[in-house]
Length: 498
Image (cartoon, rainbow, N blue to C red; front, side, top):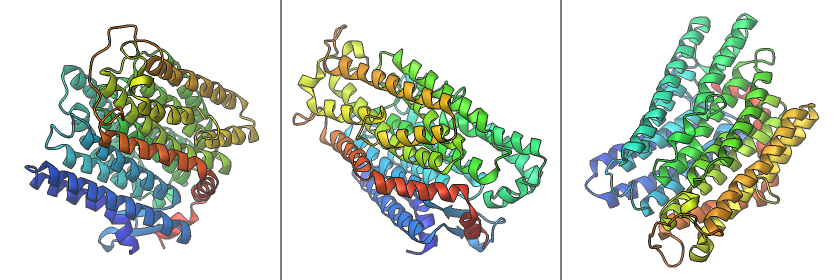
């Protein structure tokens, strides 16, 4: 494939698929074939793009033949290609799960088309080379997510979804304000061009812009103190929707933080100390919130917040080892957290509730679901030899190397508390008897704990998580190369503005 095709296919194909899905809306089977075919093709093209970028370096294309910084630039380096691959895999797995789950996808003719628009927004976020089109990509994702969050819901779901809508609109307003200020100060929004021009601004203005962009993307990533919307918005949505939101969409915000802070700002302008404080506080507040919950989805939602702190910690160290560990952590967390939320949906489907007080002794009735929960839970807590152990050790080592002992201590304490919070689910849902009258619901599937199309993609993601652990060495080497690209963006600039 040509570079232009590799860069445009993950964005254009889902948009075309969404349009066709609307046209064939009378046939749910046709919609499903279109959705699965499109996302499978996107995954294959993303893998091809990663192979191309890893072997040949950063590649870029200019839409319409307009040279940067005048035109729309699409660019992929190792970091964006890695994110695109894992994002495409999650989107495909969750779509299969949604097809198998009674509810969201089956009852709403617009699910497939809206889901594909969200997929296009995710791909565009990873591949765009300018901030304005990053804003457009975010709005594609958010517009689709508004619909998916409230799809077929009652008053409680719509009310929680409205919190997400209002906060997202405020974040979008702040983003467009930041874009206006950047353009007024530099005359460009192309990220490669901005990297040169921001350096010509007064130091105080550079620092202000760095903090402003951190706030914009911190809301989307659920970084403290901007996380309060997430635990109330996610638990009420359908399990498939929550899984892709929890596993993937918050990491788009993390990607944007890493991309802008490393590419646009030098060491003097970057708010390193502020990010370390926010990272440590995010870890602590998130995990304390998780421990206080008695609902599977709410525990998992607060855990999302907590683990965003680990990723920002790696970035805030601004060393090769710290960034590599952060990149590895993002990949591991997307897979582990998506698997956990899909398993949470199976727990709710099998047990009839997500409240721990109404669940109990499910290890007898749904042993498969118990395994599907335990493995990613231990991985998220950093238990060796699972995938979460490697990036946590990398973060600890990187922190100690630059004498950041406080954040290292916080990260270790939070790892222990993460294990404790997840073991609440393990004991409460699978071993201890219910303390309230359980909700009766028959288990579907041949002893699997749910429909085959719900269990299968969850099991596949569990295997992917185990594969990450098994091939941790090569993946960590790839993360090191991606981190080196971020710290020395010369190849990025050469690809965008040859």
